[in-house]
Amino acid sequence: MTQNFSNVPLQHIVAFKFSDDADPVQVGSIVSALRDLKNQISEIVSIQSGRNNSPESLNNDFTHAFIIKFANEQDRDTYLVHPAHEEFKSLIKPFVADVFVFDFFDEP
Image (cartoon, rainbow, N blue to C red):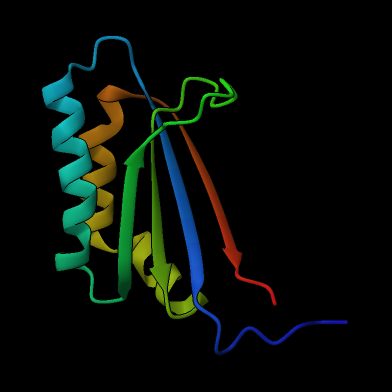
């Protein structure tokens, strides 16, 4: 059975594992730049972010996570190819060792 998610926001989760040579200033700049995408891309509903705080040590060295909310898949797809997002990806490339992305609808 296919569920209809037309009225359910899409959650886009992004997590970063920074390279060993990324210093705290660079990491802070990247976090700020990602959060600023909300001001540049109208399709973004909201952005939440934070640093890993889990005592379980299951984060595989990913230290920062973001939840970017979109009204629908089309808005997410517009974001993915938006020039501001492309510029952001170029900015972070030298400082990020790995990225994890996971999109989902909040299922009832």
